[in-house]
Image 1 (spheres, rainbow, N blue to C red):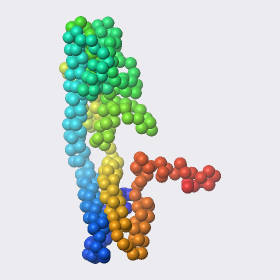
Image 2 (tube, rainbow, N blue to C red):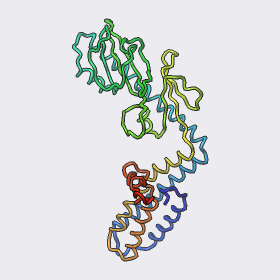
Image 3 (cartoon, rainbow, N blue to C red):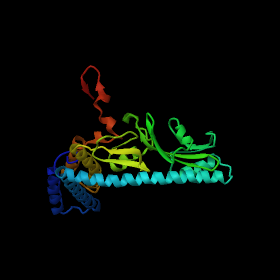
Amino acid sequence: MWTGGSTAWPLLAALAGLGIALARPLRPPSRARAAGLGLLTLGILVAFGAERQLTYVVDEWERYWAQRVDRIGDLLSDELDRRQLAGEAAADALVERWSAGRKVDATDVAELRSRFGASALALYDASGRLVAWDGMHRGKVPEAVARGERRQSYRDLPLFGYLYLTSRSEDGSVAAAAYLLRASLPDGLNADMGDLASRFYGETGERIRITEEDPGIAEAVWDLALDDDRLLSVVLARPSVEDRATAIRARWSVWVFGLVGIAWLLLAFGGPRDRMQALAAALALVAAAAWVPLDRVDAVGVVFDRAAFALPGLGTSL
């Protein structure tokens, strides 16, 4: 019931039930059931810890968000700096191989791209003709990048945004490394583009907006600049208190439900049981089916989609 969004009172009820179970000796003794009670205890403690975190977020929202902004700022700076340094190193290494008179082919470019984690890496000759290429770049590479006009640049394409790092050789050849920072695709596609914004959301739960334009007035904005010239801006989206509390509960609910589920298996099948114990185990399953928010789990959410099981002409869902 707690995983379904209830307050802390189901945890108190579970704790009382656990106390009764621990006060009664297991007859006959069963290691499996003892382990089940241990996991149940751990699950309740985890849920109480999550409830404490939820209370802090709701009651101290401004303080929590200020701390969150500082943390996100540090993480973003690290991510952007890493791509800047890696991209420059990749472009410099490719130009160095070309300038040394070595024949550069797709294998060399692929090795460098993989080593420095670029989305794409290319080599152009002095006339702008593509010599070697590896990786994936969606959309046309800007001509200014192919000519190596700037060491660093960022360009917003209609659906994607790339950070470019270039290096020029003495003969005018240009190496360019591209990093995908933004992919503006519909959520329903569920496409993993490997862009920074999507990965950052998956790792931190925070949504960021990366733009070449002036972001205007925003609460949390970080600029990536080169010689006092802004390349791009990253804007952190501020969630509502309710959305953040729901996300925190959902994250902890996975652990709580996992511990309680294993505990149920151990308690239900860990040894001989009488009719009352069998009835209690069955009622626990019914309660789980009724209250656990499985419709929020992506892998099984379609099973709980009412529209998917609508009965034509009856106005109800199977």
